[in-house]
Amino acid sequence: MTVIDLESYEDALATYDPVMGLEVHVELGTRTKMFCGCSTELKQDANSQTCPVCLGLPGALPVVNEIGVESAIKIGLALNCEIAEWCRFARKNYFYPDMPKNFQTSQYDEPIAFDGYLDVQLEDGEIFRVQIERAHMEEDTGKSTHVGGATGRIHGASHSLLDYNRAGIPLIEIVTKPIEGAGARAPEVAKAYVAELRELIKALGVSEARMEMGQMRCDVNLSLRPNGTETFGTRSETKNVNSLRSVERAARFEIQRHAAVLNSGGTIVQETRHFHEEDGSTTAGRIKDNAEDYRYFPEPDLVPVAPSRDWVEELRKGLPELPRLRRKRLKEEWGVNEHDMQSILNAGAVDLIVATTDAGAPSDQARKWWMGELARNANETGRSLDELPVTPAQVARVAELVAAGDLNDKLARQVLEGVLAGEGDPDTVVEKRGLKVVSDEGALGTAVDEAIAANAAIADKIRGGKVAAAGALVGAVMKATRGQADAARVRELILEKLGVEG
Image 1 (cartoon, rainbow, N blue to C red):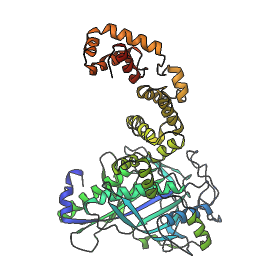
Image 2 (image 1 turned 90 degrees about the vertical axis):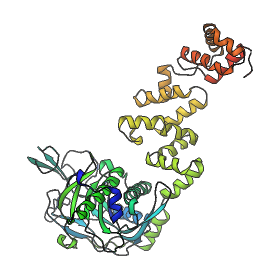
Image 3 (image 1 turned 120 degrees about the vertical axis):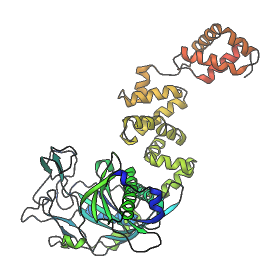
Image 4 (image 1 turned 180 degrees about the vertical axis):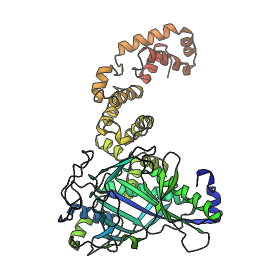
């Protein structure tokens, strides 16, 4: 099916009720893999971070990563889950080249965390509760690179390269219960849920959760049922969606695609789907296996995990302030409305603004620079705010120079431009570019005199009571000083010299 075959979104929702299930894989930030001592450091030579255990060689025995278990418990607690008193790992059996063992060590019917929920806030402020089925521990697969084709996928490739450095990296898979009742807002709920989950994971410090780097990725399960019915429809599973916008687009596309198939008398195939960033479409992958096809059985080489209640409660007490409560507190402290707070969140600027205020800047100035000049630069260069080569301390220093009168806003923007260009810290850029505000009264007085002499007609208007005309003379002085004068002080001097009350 192609894009032109889609049902309109409005018509789809007039007939059908969407039901979603979201499976989010989070790559934990441990130093070593889940069941062996191999490093998890990124960007190393292919297959240089492997050993007999993560390659599944005969006789190699795995050992559970304690920090991985601790991270799983923290995530479960933050998601309001029950923490299992006893649980086991299982072998999920299937053959694929990126699984060197031909099975994945995971958890099946005994997850470490279960029966939780996460409240998410939609753009209009409505709170929607997403029920959590489970959060379980497992390991990541290796990476396949398909060479010789036009799309980078296996179809059409001449050969494939395998890198097992990622095989065995700890993962937590968080699975929702069926998400019902969202109606036309289902795609928005999906996006808001993944966004809130990402903020929570980052707050816990268990992962950087950078979706663009594959540290967090979402599988979007979606089905439609006729309005007013209870039985779920056949679902599709769009795999490895790696941005918030794409999660929303994938859900929306599948709603329209399912509706078109059903309205034409067709049948939905239970299958995996590939998401395409360029146009927001999905295409068929493989027929989706049921759980029994994986032939799960308990992992015989690992002992059960039985976290003590004392340990669980100790971890509970150590949880940080969770994102939604933190945002509520910051919103009140900063004096911003819900719309502005949502914009700050969407821009990924909350932590940057907090760090800038911690470095000494007033919160309004921190918000001004991160959501203004720096956000503009990020958009123009296709980067996120935290990828910009400027630190919160440097932004705080720029705000300090403005507050001291050493810079005006125009000069401050030039200073940030220099910092982003790698010219040094703010003070170095100011010195190299000669950007300080001209504060010498003698030099300003001379510039004002010259502007008055060159614009006699305007000066006469001001003397005659048209004080607003002073703006033209201010502009002339600012031009003469290359924007480095204090505009307010220039206006005062103009009116003083012309004998006019401000």
